[in-house]
Image (cartoon, rainbow, N blue to C red; front, side):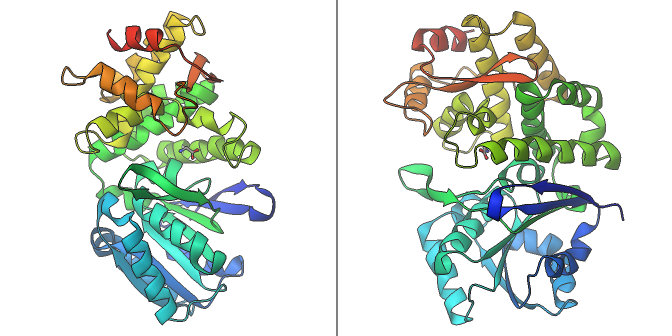
Length: 362
Ligand code: GLY
């Protein structure tokens, strides 16, 4: 099996990201190679466990780990303080200590709750991220953002906590719907659009192969996404310098839209796809980007089958109000990562409300 490796060089918290097909069969050995042993709690949910649990458990047992399976509710519901407290109880009952490991097996929500608990239990124990959705493989599992929700906001309680290792197995993706693969592809397009033009045009040429899970193109797209994200996180781990914020291209409008729909109607990637189109248009209207940047982006996303327009049921003023309360906003000023060209972005403070309003009306 050919194993791709991306190294995240984040000082004392540096770690390898392994990418391959069937790589989860080697997880026990790869964890041993970086000095992890002893107790391992797999944090997962029923759906993921039924699909992929046995393989991961066997790979750990065969390398001598004491394996415990801790199930949390499906979906976003697992990201609560109540669930975190239940997980702390389980870890205390099983006498987990700082040499033990928490392994997050699942999508972005699982990575978030498992990561949050790993970051806080005994002031931090070993965390291994094993993302099972394309969205989590190219984004959520990389870079150490972990959080739970508060009734008054998504991801309101959280921290930065880098894993010891990330293991990406494309075999997991076979069980996903095309809609979920498309949603992950939106984040892949984002990396190209805002940070790497060559990669954007690679995705433009190869998106059909990626969606149909052709090994070569899929592995390349995941590896490149990880490399692009890691280079950004290395420069601005804690999102303080306006560099990591570039990864939020499409997310200011996208997050506002998701929350307006109470996180139901749209997948995250779909909201980001719509968000990227409007934010590219805002960039054109601000004179930062040429019209072709907007057109090119809309064209690619539309071809892929992602949504590119707001539907009529969206209240634009409500959307703008939500943007003003985004975590990235400062003193009510809306800040956005905007493209200047395909593959080149800039983080802009104080994007004028009138320009946003004008773009959203199109
Ligand atoms: N998903 C954006 C970031 O990790 O910074």
